[in-house]
Amino acid sequence: MGNPGPESSLPVEAPPLESLRDEQRDALNFAYRTTLSMDPRFVAGDPAAWCSDFGYALNRAAVRVDNRTDEELQHDALHHPDPVMREQAVFEYADRDLPDAFELLAEVIRHDKNREVRWDTLWAMEKLGGPHAIAALRRFAKDSDPEIAEWSKLFASELTTGDPAFDGRGGVFTEGRTFDETIYLLIHCDLYVRLDGTNQHWGKVSLGPLGLARVYGQAHACPNVATREKQLLMAKTISGLHVDGSPHMDNYLFRGFTERSRRDRGNFFFESQVPRTFFKSGRADDPSQGTHDTRIGFARYGTWHLDPTLKVRGEDAIRYVRGRFQGWGYTNVESVAGKSLEEILQPGNGILSTMHDPEVRDLTNVFILGTFKGKLNDWDGDGRIDLNSRDVYSTVDGEIDSNQDGIADEPGRTCCDYRAVGL
Image (cartoon, helix red, strand yellow):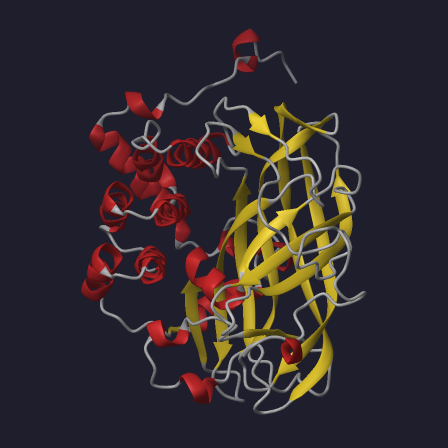
C-alpha cells in the first residue's frame, strides 16, 4: 500500500456539543434515537454474540404491568406525596421513551424536595441517552446540592467519554468499621413476570431504585482493600417489614474474578450462592403458606473506578461502581392481582428464587435483569466524602452482625431468622 500521507494519522475530533446549533443538536439526537430501534443483527455480525440477550427478547414480548396513562404518570411524577411513587412514575415514563420525557425529568430534578428522587431522576435521564441527555444533565452541574452536581457531572461524562468524572472533595475514613468502604447502591431493574404456563404471556415492571429498595432492600457494596479483587459483600436492609421497627437484614457474599490491566479500575464478574428460607406466600418473612430452605444464586458484573485522591489503607479507594445483575424471583400473582402498583410496592412483597431446587422452581416466575450504580457520597454535609460511614449489619463473611462489632450474631446465618423477630 502507498503512503497515505501525514494528514491521515491526525485524530479527527468531534466538535463540542456546546458549539452545535439547535437544529444540528436535534438532528444528532434524532440519529441517536433512530438507531435504538434497529435490530442489532443487521449491523453487528453474528446474532449468537449480539442478539442472545434474554432480557431483550422479553422486553419485546412483555406487556406493562403499570397501566397508568401517560398523563397520570406526569401528575404522579410531580405531585404524588410518596417519593417512591414519584420516582416510580419517572422511571416508567422514561422507559416508555415518550417525546417529552426530557422536559418532565428536568422538572422533577429542579423541583423535587427529595435529593434521592433528584439524583435517581438524573440517572433515568442518562438512560435516555443522546445529545439531549448530555445537554440536560449539564444544566445541573452547578446545583446547590454537591451530590446532585457531582451525579450530573458523572452521568454527562459517561455519555461523552464512557468514564465517570468526579469533583475534588476530600474524604473521611472511619476507623474500627468492618468494611473499608460502604457504597450506597442505586439499583434499577426490569422484572419480567411469567403470567401463565404457556410462556407466551409476560408482564414487565421497570422498578426504580427507591421502589426496589422498599421491596427488596437498600443495598450497599462493601469492599475491603485486601480482598476486593476476589470477593465483595453486598448488604441489604428492608425498612418497615418488622413490626418491632428493626431492619430486615439480608447479606450476600459474592466471589469471582477481577481484571486489573488498568491501574485506575477493575472489571469484575462475581456470583453469590447463599442459604435462604423461601416463603411460598411470595412475601419475605411470611410463613403462612409454608416455607422451604434452599440456596439462592445471583450474578453481578461491571466495573469499579478508583480515585487516586482518596486513599484507603494505602491504596486508591473505589469511588464509583457500575454494572449489571440478573437472577430469579417469585411473586404471588394471585395475591397482587387487581391491586394498584402503590399497593404492590410494599416491603418484602417479592422474594428471590432459584431454578435449581425442585421444591420451588415451579413457583419461580420472575426473571430479574437490571443495572446498578454506586458512588461515595457526603452523608453528613461536612463537605467531605464519607468512605465507610454507612450502617452495614454484616461480618466480612456475610453473617448477620446486628451491632456491627465484626462478630456474627449466629455463625453461618446470613439473613434474619423470621422466627426471632417481631412480625
